[in-house]
Amino acid sequence: MMKMEYETMKIDRLIGILSILLQEEKTTAPELAEKFEVSRRTISRDIEDLCKAGIPIRTVQGIGGGISIMDGYRMDRTILTSKDMQMILAGLRSLDSVSKSSYYSTLMEKIRAGSSKFISGRDSVLIDLSSWYRDSLTPKIETIQDAIEDRHMVSFRYYSPSGESKRTAEPYFLVFRWSSWYLWGWCTDRKDYRLFKLNRMDEVKETSDTFLCRNAPMPDLSAEKIFPGGIRVKALFSNDMKWRLIEEFGPHCFTETKDGRLLFTADYTDMENLVTWLMTFGAKAEVLEPEEARDILRKNAEETLKIYKEDETDGV
Image (cartoon, rainbow, N blue to C red):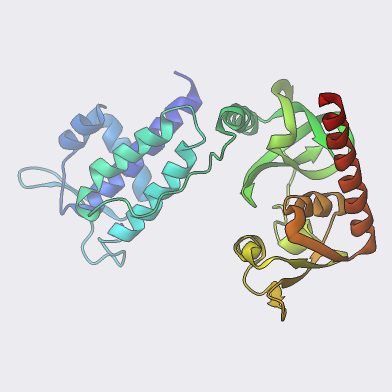
């Protein structure tokens, strides 16, 4: 068995043992050994590791003895309350939604089995991170996860508004943000840290090339950093588009005019994305500013109309 697999099994077992000790007054090494299908010697080493981690565990030999958390310890025995467990399980389910393996579901069952007294009622928080692109995203996520653990470079073809290119990067973090998955890594081409959108990545491969782990900073995921603005947008929307504006920008992004239309104002960071977004509203949006966006939309509308007029002529 590989060392990584052994360590993973050990961590799972330590979580299970701790959850049992938190809910029960006392247990025994034979009971734990039977439950986790390991030797008593392995359980003894696990208890030692939990003690080293700062959990004050008491072991008493002989009749009436057993393993327990020391009396008077400040950690509340009900630290894994129903709400806490629901949050833990919700987080595990969210990871399981983008994983082809059974690792997270197996871990959920282990925690459930050791914490049944703390879980009541049905699951109240459901998180699915897979999106519509699960079939294409999951292999990329798992490849990048493996590369991060192995400290291997990843290679991929990347598609951006400026064109497509072949990239190689040192992978450091998988990020779920703004309803999309990203890779945060050191781009060998740009000689800097970059945030790559997984949906724009193709042919993602873990290479055999290793890298020395840099002191990589956490990515700045603030909206101000990623979407710095710079393009002041002013547009009028029909009232029946209120739900979309609220969903995407919040209830304070517009004011209602006398004729019932919605005057929308915001800062945008990219003209191409702005125009693409506005075009999804069709005739239900009228751009007032910037003039460049009005010109692009007018040109797009004329070209689209020309295509459909040609279709009508062909059909006559």
